[in-house]
Image (cartoon, rainbow, N blue to C red):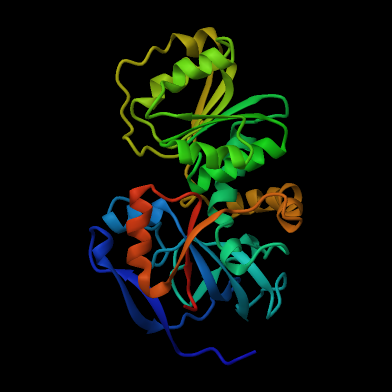
Length: 335
């Protein structure tokens, strides 16, 4: 194994703002603290929370680096004191609190999972943030079961494309919304039974018609705002709405709350980044047992729309904000 250099390239934000504040610089290579490992990063995923951090609305939790990046794939090159569960040279993908947009990144061993056998490093870098988020919110909090119906908004996004694949694999009937016919076709190619172009049709009316007014059992939503009332209106009896973001704001007006009582609805939500290592490790254990065999066999996979060199992270952020991508956006850190 090559010697670890004392300096590395990393991305930082030159103040709060748009993609123009995303800059490349040199910095000292970190040394892993006790109980941590150092990963030489091959690729890192780009996610909307990175853009929110860049704009100044989503600062990293206390104790985390200001360097963006929540998911990485690479090779373990140094072990902190007391680490016994990983070895030098292990190929992993990892969920990290920050620091992924760099050539080297510290990670917690409990949040490092083996690089799936069927995936490249670039594909593996698109696994942690989305698969942790989807599994925990759809199958743990949302309790989606085989034979139930599931709706995910924004089905062509990284979260959406992952949710479609997992929900379909585990036996659900899958509905999704997307902003164009092309995106709807993409969602259907991943297994969606019904993909609704929300710019052309009213998804509430469409779902009521398809389900004969029954509605759907579980909804995963990152839109918020006006979607909150609409989601409540199309949940079936004992339905669950799981909120993971508010792209159109956290305020909902003119919500009819009566269905919550009459149909015994469950409204919940979560964020991933601020949660404890122990909580995230519990999700990792579920993924290792239930999802990793599917990734190893190539039965599900992150869909990579575009890969950018680390130095072009600004362009990756600009693409993310257009919402034109189908699946994940990845940084090739070695590029």
